Length: 162
Image (tube, rainbow, N blue to C red; front, side):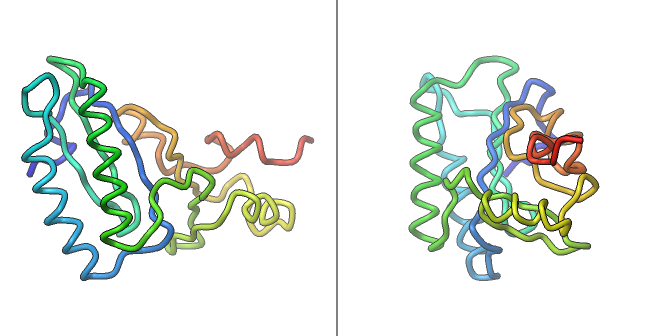
């Protein structure tokens, strides 16, 4: 299976954050299911030039290279169905956009957005805390703006106004 490093700069990105870190068995199942999905993933009757990868045993990232052709609505729908299938198979939540992930040292922590706001208020999380910006859409953003200090992400709007 390809990796995102083999795709063009015109690659689109979708990031799905797991509600928790996957264990070794779940990582194995993910790999098997992802490989099968990518082999059968089509757009306009042609194979999608893309990749699905797992980062930090927590983030499932779909990459679709649109250099030659844009993906159709059916291929996007198929990817969402695949993510829903993964949720069932792995017994995790992947579609909750209200989850926030950040680093405490080298550990990745996930919590609800409301809890994250309280962590900011308490000072446990600050503008220098590394956060995962799962709203990015391009491979360039993935490489440069996915893991950034809170002050450089959409999360900065949660900081107190000074």
